[in-house]
Length: 107
Image (cartoon, rainbow, N blue to C red; front, side, top):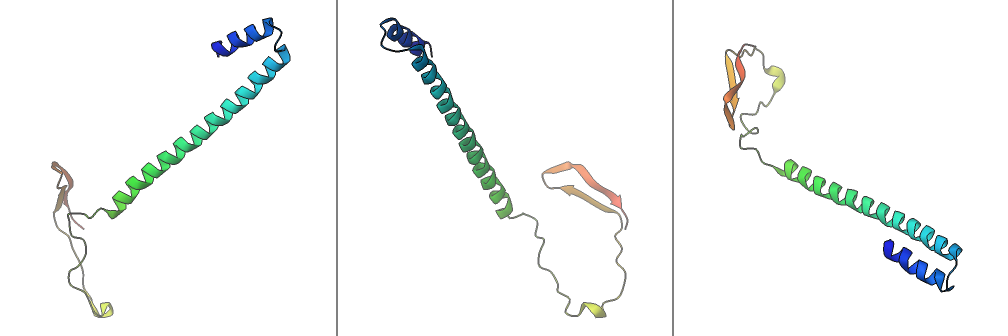
């Protein structure tokens, strides 16, 4: 910016440019720079979204170590009768064995 002002001063002193032309140049330059800043802002946000969507995709494709599917299938669930009771249920996550999440609940 200082270099542009210095060159504009030299040209103005030599009567090669007018104050109006200098003002117009600065106005157009500011408008152009504003547009470049806006494009950079949008591109940055788009790249951030792409990076975050890649992380979400990785989380969705994660296969847990604990098997949660399978087991015995009930053919005709309408014929099943009875009660289910859980006694003294305790649970800790494999990565934090020292923190007990369920502490002997009964349902």
